[in-house]
Amino acid sequence: MSFPRVKTSRGELRIHDSLDDLSTDLVEYISEISDASVKERGVFTIALSGGSLIGFLRKLCDAPYSKTIDWAKWYIFWVDERVVGKSHPDSNYKLAKEGLLTKVPVIPSHVHSINDSLSAEEAASEYEFGIRQLVKTRLISVSDVNDCPKFDLILLGMGPDGHVASLFPGHPALNVKDEWITFITDSPKPPPERITFTIPVINSASNVAVIVTGGSKAEAMRLAVDASNVRPDSLALPARMVQPTKGKLVWFVDRQAALKLDGVE
Image (cartoon, rainbow, N blue to C red):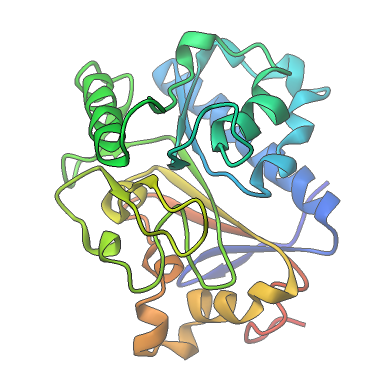
């Protein structure tokens, strides 16, 4: 099954009539990037977000993907994480473990989660250190335009306020450029303490996909994507700041989220 694809200055736009269609398209996209990465590098590095995103990945647990994907080559990270215990309902790790990781044959040592016994600052520092070690061995590629890690795929959601990862509008964390992982203790959404990839790391990825659904996100989607709406408020939107330097950006959206986009019927 193929779905319409629209090329824009802000990446490729894929608009779906149903959430099921979006999920079908997304898992096929992930499978293709996984296959290409394993063929080229021998591994596939993917960074997950939380929220509703994991639900859209459920089809990876079913045929044909459960059998055709080379799960032993997957190395899994988190774009952002809430600094709570791994069994806490707010944990992105718990969400991914229950919705995906326990249902596919990934290798447990390839799953890189934060140390939840530390403070937010300490957890961010330790998580960055671990990623730096994997960049040194080139398990994670390195960007050829800066020293940032180059993940094969980063998956993002977007909130109604235009936030991605745990990077919120107007927050100082948006301006962090010299660290790969930063932390916040005052998230406008609970829980307050989180760690998050910085914008330079997100934009160093080979592929970035942003999944956006629901009418409550239509205005943020317009500000994030439409070329005709370049205003100071849109440029300051975290989702607008997502623009891979040399990688590819794809937006997976439903009709409701796309309602305010120019030229979309």
